[in-house]
Length: 433
Ligand code: DLL
Image 1: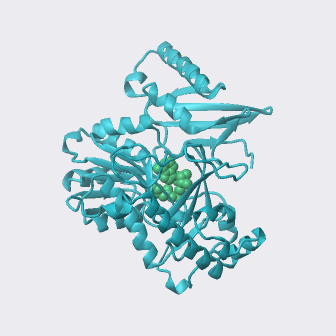
Image 2 (image 1 turned 120 degrees about the vertical axis):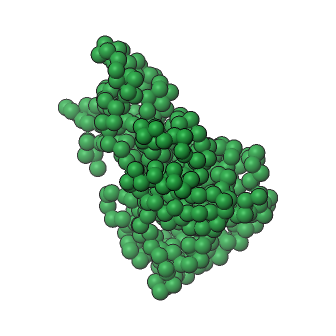
Image 3 (image 1 turned 180 degrees about the vertical axis):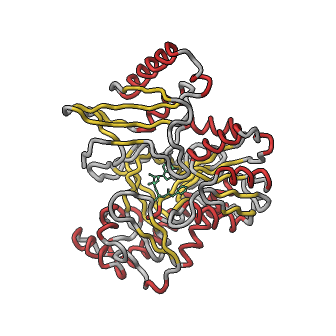
């Protein structure tokens, strides 16, 4: 039996989970109101006082927090404990605007490690595993989060960080890595590189814990087949702690949210109205156990569906779907909503690798959607006329999925730059914002 499975928490009854959430929410709201003037001000503007929040049913009385609030309050404005009680900061990978900085007490780090340990155990991890972490270390939460989780499970942890693919593969072979933790796009690149070096027989991986970016079911199948592993999704965001806010179990049917620490809601991204389970909308989190940086009703911008049906693994914590896009990353091309994940689904279904780039431009007030897609070496050896046929076929499939025309350009194998962290899929050259 794995030594970090917590059935008393992860398989608790819904009544028990609600009781924990009610009690912790009430305490947390008071903690935030008393210690974070920025949030107290937001509550006052909404006419809410801590006494109004008696259970999770009252959650919707609280104001939302957004990334803009975090930027405005940068760096210390949302800190809820004295700085001297904090032992760590992490920061988002965002490239625009001010970075978001999150603070942690030792208690916060412990609970974050617990969440990641649960994810590793759900992927079959035990103290006998060799956990190969090639998420970036440093300000990004991926490396430190999975590292902490792996220590809690008692696994041998390889703190590889990202990059240096040759060394990654060498250690994987020499030290017998059994669980790989990285972005799905880097996992696909590693798989490709392992085959190129003819080392597939020396790889002992059994599972992968992949997240930090969107990836389709088709990409999961591709990675699973190439690396002969079971690939598990893991989700999280710096603002709420990092990876491990939710994670997949062996059922691979959605990610269990660690509900003893986080309350998940789905809202209509336009009206802010709370939507019932099963409806698609923006995911909102309230962290009910964190001390230093406890966000209430934080709008993630990730578009998801929640599912509270019983899971075959026995866990009772609510499951969130893979994010289907972001309310802010969604492209609007010629007035039509386009999610990169839709394009990826079409490409992988048609046998293309997940190496593609979406480029949007605007000429004479008209949007142009271009999709660069790498061919496999076999496709590349086709005659030119066959490549043209392939491009036309992809045009048709993309039109059927998106409802608009996309220019497809098939490009030579390996010509799209590989990413060691989050892949850059979309280049929007329209300067809309
Ligand atoms: O990406 C934390 C993380 C590290 C998660 C390692 C999983 C593994 P940020 O850099 O703050 O944190 O980015 C958070 O990444 O709001 C989602 O849009 C996206 N994201 C994270 N996990 C997934 C996933 C880390 N499994 C933002 N599927 C989130 C799709 C994901 N998108």
